[in-house]
Length: 88
Image (cartoon, rainbow, N blue to C red; front, top):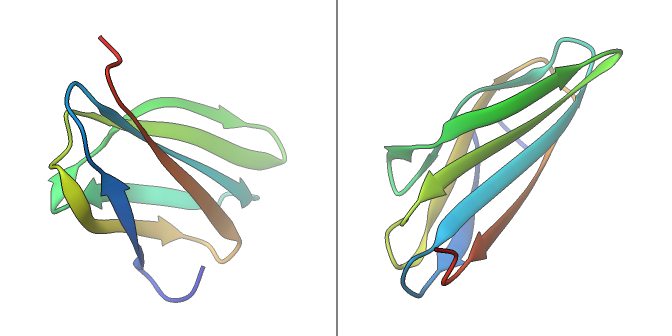
């Protein structure tokens, strides 16, 4: 990541979609909030051991290319994002 919050652009075009954001972090690092087009994502699961991994999602995100913003604690956090269409 570069800066807090970390931001990047993500395309979510199509109907009946879901945006999924995953993160991996070292130690007690991890996101405290993630949003897409200023709409908060919901944390689905969090796994902790010597690291931290989480899955966040947003149903029917705004169509088009918008900004994902992830606020976090710690220093070693990485993210992936994908948008899936016709999921329901």
